[in-house]
Length: 584
Image (tube, rainbow, N blue to C red):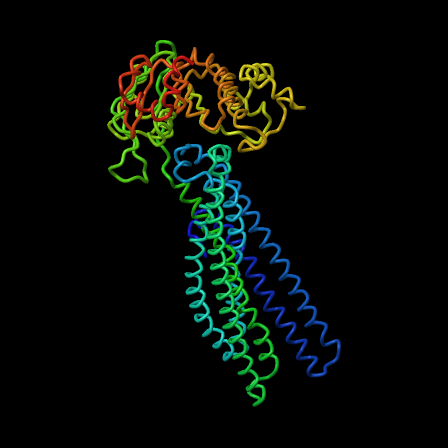
């Protein structure tokens, strides 16, 4: 139940000392409460005067109030500590995702990130604020109650002491079974999130292709498997709870039998027997609560492990800074013998192999190929998210680079993926992504150049309209235009990387967006990954990828009609209708 990484948290020793002190005071209050109640009951049994009850009842009620106050104080201290750590972890997780980049998200799934940042951190908070007080309670409450029971009646103390290892044994056996099932359940929960989030993001495309019903069945299948795993965890949790309740009740019953026989034969007086019987349930209570909360916090423990694994994931190394003023009309970039291998792929499988590429000045370069040919992988490498294998040679304006994860290069790059990220903010704030201090006039001009004028005119608040995170409330075309407006607003970035930006758009929306983008291409280095062949007429150079290799490259005039990779791709993707795309 206790994750060792908890002991690496800031101020954990101080927090445990505070909780230990509060648990010790609470344990003393529990013993005092039992003493007061027992003495009061003995006084009643002995038919003593009412005045004899005043002191025992005062002790009882004072101890009861102190016990509740300590419980509240522990919960508040643990909750405050959990809030502190969640506040500390959230930006660390966000920064880690930023450093790892979209390539990592592509491998692990968007739903996994949603699970960690939203549900996972909430579960971690519950885990921290639950487990820490339970641990200190389980140490001090049984210890103090057992000492006092031994002091008053050693036979009852021996029974309690003998039953304790037996209860821990069954807790361990059932806890291991619950942990294994809970791990499977949490893995299915992450998979369900991945399937759901990815399906929602791609819903327009799925509908357009007519396969939305197929993915609906897939989500149902994953959710049904998650339900079954959840039920199996609940079954183990109920079995564990029953076992704990059974053995604690059995122990209390054995003590009651021993005390009853001893009271009958007169070998013990009423007070030690009564106080031992009252303290017996208190002795087992923290252990039972610990066992019950074990199942309630397993998801939090799994989420904490996932957070730790994420934070421990090596981030791509940042290349050494270079003296470079940025991309200009006379700039040159050369890639030679560039290979890339995904960490989770087979050792002999390269996603990119022997890539040779040259770019000069304000050229427009198209990267085309079938799905899975490596277009997105190459774009992520150029953006600095994927790191090339050793042996690659990258030269930027005469200066060697180890990778594109280089501050000066990335400060000059605007990256527009298939699904631009839209923040939960105003349209103006989303456009200001690269230039937070841009004036309202500059934002309006960028929006107008990006073709957002008609849409903004239809909104009562215009640029001040709130839009939702993950593109809620806007169409794919509007999201792409906001991304284009970001580029138009930042005049400093002269390198544009487009990773199939029109993949999810209908042809009419794509045509309108194309008219917006083409003027932007004139004074930028543009590297445009696409499977839409009509873009090739606007390109100075075409690179055809096949299975992670460049099969051919050159101008459109050089490649068309040679029977090479481009002609084969045109035939497969467009046939005769697209054979004359150069004229359109």
